[in-house]
Image (cartoon, rainbow, N blue to C red):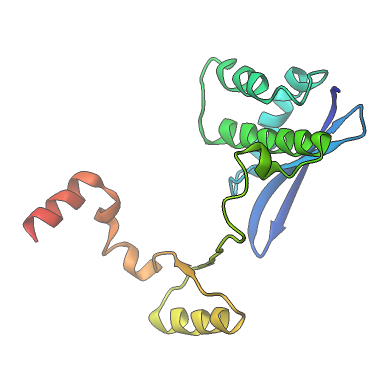
Length: 174
């Protein structure tokens, strides 16, 4: 089995952009992957296009070898955009391998660990009133867990929380 094509699909859902990719093979099996990097999908497409010549003709079942070629084959390893592209490709390779073997991907990754995965809704807000209103709507829709992004009016107040030296000083000094 050989990789014959790589297609990119930038999507925007509810104001969040994302990149999905599709790897196709000469065996008629294809795999889907997602980059996981919001807002930089065009840069990730560039990285996927850069990797295309390295992937075409490769056996998609050789996941570890391909990963090493993609990650370590670059002069500068890593970075958000490159690792997002590699991540999408890696997921698609596992999808292909699972389909080829007739098993779910979780079997390739050590087996089923649970019967369900809890999900959360992300919530941005600019006031306490907006937070309460949006949270109530999400709870009514069945969400049990909410992840709150810092309110813009609070960001200035808590900016040092994300600066380790300042955060530690604040904790030590009260």
